[in-house]
Amino acid sequence: MTITKEQIAKARVLVVGDVMLDRYWYGAVDRISPEAPVPVVRVTREEERAGGAANVAYNAVSLGAQASLLTVVGDDEASHHLEALVAETGIETHFRRDAELKTTVKLRVIGRQQQLIRLDFENTPKNEILAGQTAAFESILPSHNAVLFSDYGKGGLAAVIDMIERARSLGKPILIDPKGSDYTRYQNATVITPNRAEMQQVIGHWSDEADLRTKAHNLREQLHLDAVLLTRSEEGMTLFDADGELHVSAQAREVFDVTGAGDTVIATLAVMVGAGLSLREAMPLANRAGGIVVGKFGTATVSYEELFV
Image (cartoon, rainbow, N blue to C red):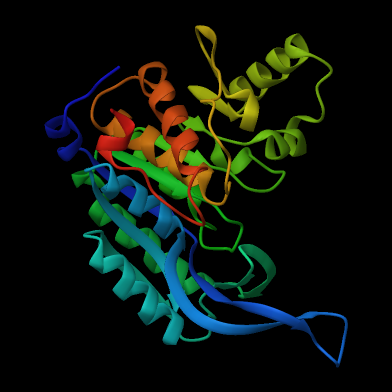
């Protein structure tokens, strides 16, 4: 299904969740260290990208929609770098700062086109900062067509139950990229988008498609969701809703890097729903976008032209 650029331009998506700064150090690997059996990387280039919920919002604006980003960060060098990166893309930023919080940074060291190691720097935000985030959410929510909660399990969505309730009362579509084994906090959302591993954490392993169907619909009904969208990598994705199931196969192309593919899928879904499509109409486009982005390196995005060529 094709949707015009003008329709997408009117879509306003509010992204709430955990952000991170993705740092990449690229270098040459010419020798093994005399100190330990590890490669020595001579760093020749550094790059920074907006990750987590910031990458989700970036995916929305890359498609031509409008996006706002509400998040909690530290008051540190990484947060200011991240805010500047996000602002450059045209995303409207609403950064709440916690002086005791360490902004999440994922540092990847790349040598010979391979990721050699990833170093994570992070801790958890304080409750009073999160309370302020909820108040900010209520004030900016009415001007948006769809709400997207991007949960990376870093603690930034501790108040998600209240925010879902508020969004639901205003009739906003609520899309959630979930984390963890307890999905009860996502009750009353429109759709959640777990991948296979995340789904298995919650409903257990399934023996066949019929077993999956039963368990997925049980989960949907227990949580009072309109739909569950299961992303299945090379198997495509399946939507479970009140009308049954809809499956789309993966777009056949070379897989280079799956980093951030889930971000692209849910961002595309939110943009299309915000522009007026149903979940069943939006899902094949989200699937196509995910298929395009895995052909790119690192956290990446998809443009309107790429999606509709």
